[in-house]
Image (cartoon, rainbow over all chains, first blue to last red; front, top):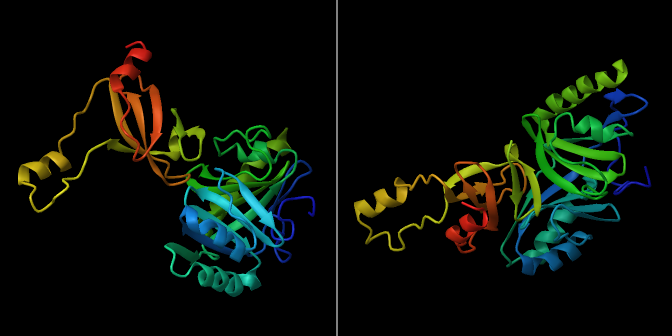
Length: 191
Length: 101
C-alpha cells in the first residue's frame, strides 16, 4: 500500500479477517495506532509541528504526512496526530516538552476509536450509502479529512488514495459502521 | 434537507451535521453583580422569535465543532449569509432587500 498516503502508518490488522472482500470493494480492519488530540493556538503550531515531525495543516479539511507521522485538520484549533503505537510516549513527551508554557491541550485518544480501510472502485459509492458528502476527486481530493455522520454515528473519513478511505469511529460504534457497510455492499453482489 | 455553509470548514454540508443554537448576538450582562432580575430574564428567556430575516447561532457539531452565525429567512428557510462567531451582525435589512423581500 506504498502508493497511498501514510502507507507506513495505516496498515491492515494482520490478525483480523477481512470484513468484506468483493472484487469492487473491500473492508479491512486497520492496525492500532497512536492517536493524539491537540488543541492549540496559531503561535504554537510551528513548534508543535517540529516536535511532532510533521507540520500541522492550517487549510480546512486537509492533512499532512511525513515519515510515520500524519497530522489531520479537525477544526481551526484542533488536530488529530497519528503515529505508530510504539511511539506514543516519545511523541507525547516530545510535544509536551516543546509546548510547555504555551496554552494547549494534548490528550492521548488512541483507544477511543477504531479504524477500517475501505478500498476499491466502489469505495466512495459504498460510503455514500450513509454519508452525505460529495466524494468526487474534485471536491474531495486525496488527503482530505473530515468528521461527518455515517447514518446516525459520527465518523472521521480520510481519503488516503483515489479509491481508498480510512473510516474511524468510536470503538463501540464500529460494529454498527462496519456492519452497515457490509450489509449495503450486498447490493453490489446482487447486481 | 438544508445545505449549510460552515465558515470554518469553508464547505457546504448537510443539515444533519449541524445543530441550531437559537438567536444570535445575545450579550450576557457585562457586570453580573449590577444586573437586575429583569436583566437576567431578558438575557435568559426573552427572544424576538422573528418571522422573516433573523440571525441565528449554528454549531457544526459533527464537523469542526465550532459555533458560527447564519442569517436565515425563517419563513422560507433560505439562508442568506454565514459568518464566523465574533464577527459583527450584518445589515439584515440590506440582506433582505438583496433577497428581494
